[in-house]
Image 1 (cartoon, one colour):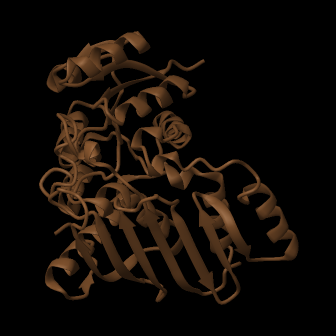
Image 2 (image 1 turned 30 degrees about the vertical axis):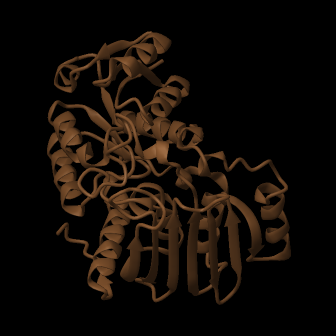
Length: 354
């Protein structure tokens, strides 16, 4: 049996989900956690019987640690990832990898120079239904892609943006934005996963019903590099909240998912359609959209698969299933949408890190 790959987690808000996933992952072991708030840190360290650090620099000197999961405030991600890479640690980066493409590219260079692996968290890509749709699209069952649209009608109450761990949220300098950068980036990433790169955008964003700096609603139009058109809307204002919906259609068929379950599948043969709806239809299993109301309700299965894949990638010396270069494009699109909202003009999506 190969020895386990030893993980540490920095940032114990959403980082607690990383801890749960690492504890369950084959080939992984949680050996340390880090947070400046001892009231969060010490109970988690006790729960997992691992080392507790209040100093990130001190944790990086720990020779027992092989991988660092970075789950801190978004604008800190790249800097902390670069520090870990230079210390010889492999990485798991929570979404968004950082809040500007340029910062992410600097992280990419540091990872390459250090010769370490870096896996990124877009857990919806690991969902079996989404993988099956991706495979069908790649196999040509949708035909020529014509339209691909996403919506995320969620709600976040005032408490989410308050307190010692909430005031950074929906700020431009630290969160990089609001409902689009923080919550909607998962929906956008799925559109990219299914439809490919986005070439240009136009959009609007504003604050409607929260006392926050960045937007609580954003809408955008997307032109994909393959010529398809799409739309995206995200909000944290919707009462009652609803599930994420993805709707795609092409010259040969269409599909629609609601909370990562198939609501419509009209691609391929009749046998294909029946099999997909039987496996992934909304009646196939209960749908839990509690995360629409509570960010801490997120499941850990996608995280677990990403962590197990990173363990194998380290052992096999290959790229992780969701590498930095792939995760960067969602941030490129978000930043372009924000620029469009500020200027009132369509914006080409920059892919050079500027």
